[in-house]
Image 1 (spheres, rainbow, N blue to C red):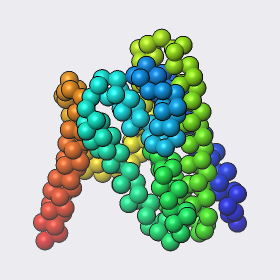
Image 2 (cartoon, one colour):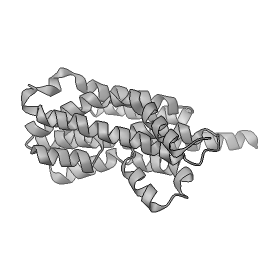
Image 3 (cartoon, rainbow, N blue to C red):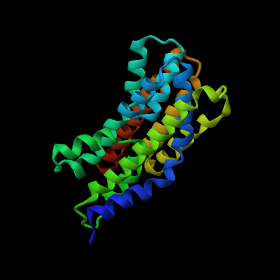
Image 4 (tube, rainbow, N blue to C red):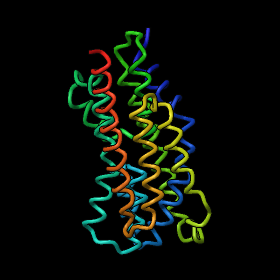
Length: 238
């Protein structure tokens, strides 16, 4: 029979392959944070309290480009809207937990933890301790991220032009690898393809506004496709 300890260890173990993906993110984030004018303390505080790799990465880049604060806030907000979808997906499995569980699990929820955890929740084995599995994954990701960010901040001055190393390619590759297993229907495929195409077209927009535009293009394309498919299905049934 499953136990909290077993679930916790399993969550951390299943997340292990994704931990190495934080290595280039953390190092480059730390180096860019230092070179963009953030103090090591401020950079570490962002890593500890924001704990959102893509948002931190984008925010630091925008800070370095002297982008207006309103644009930085709006961009990071849009980028992190995907967490609402994660929360909505996990809500049926976590809604009975007390707030002392839901609050930290919500804070520690990342793309990697969601990708690993949602499969565990969907497995029908009757375990009442699956939230411990998510906790194990979350703690593993959190400690791992703090380590690499801290190392990047310490080595920031010693990494010449870290952005030119090409390590940042690991970010889109990691996200693509996590997204592909969830592309199981036409609306989702259209959403992904539309967002990808839009990101290429809007790459030259200032302040990285292409990220916001592409996000909305993908969302609306998926919604419209889903509605068309639903209407077509109704007509076929009639």
